[in-house]
Length: 307
Image 1 (cartoon, rainbow, N blue to C red):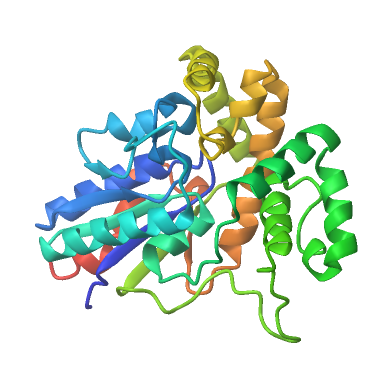
Image 2 (spheres, rainbow, N blue to C red):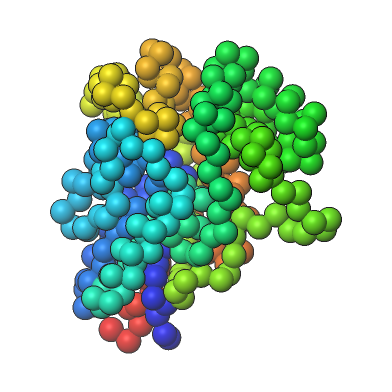
């Protein structure tokens, strides 16, 4: 069995990605490999909101080196395009050094950006985005969805009225003339098999009720660890608009913990939907085994063969 070059581990918030990645690293080292984790999480790039984004869990794992975690100051704007350049450099450097890159994350676009070459649409001028975000806060997401429905109904039907970030992005593309209607009958590509390096893609899942319980426990732990104070300090330091998109940032800034829980569970639902549409993804049910090391050996099997 020839092992792929890259192992990608994707899963929703609170599913247990870090624990599985650390166990996979142990299995790989037992077979003589040298693993390194590369984060595919949009918000874990930022330094200063590690508790909120779960980045602290990754940074505290002595058993597995993590890259692209807490590397950007809060005041810098970022994008999938910028992340792609960073991720490609880290993956290529790891392979050149004979290491096994473990791309680990829960942000679908950033997973794609790490593993493929994306054809990214142009960014909008800052003034266009700022105006749309101000309108969003003033009028609400339903208003923006109605605007998009009037301007491009074919685009609006693909976006939930509550999906604030996609509404802003789609409307700004419309306003700068970069919103392209897909050809009739063309698939809505969430993924492409045209990866930069041979990749094994593993999706982690759990029972929905069990996952909800884990989300609540994770949020409780974040709050106990000072996530609300962290958010207030980040806002006072002038956090960039992209940093403020971290799940829970705005709700905690407003003191609304219930909204943070609701928003996180809605986001997890979208993550699971996206993941289950990935062609070629191997789904691993973490509820089916309490032995994370056994799960890890299954995931790392192509690299362990013959050892």
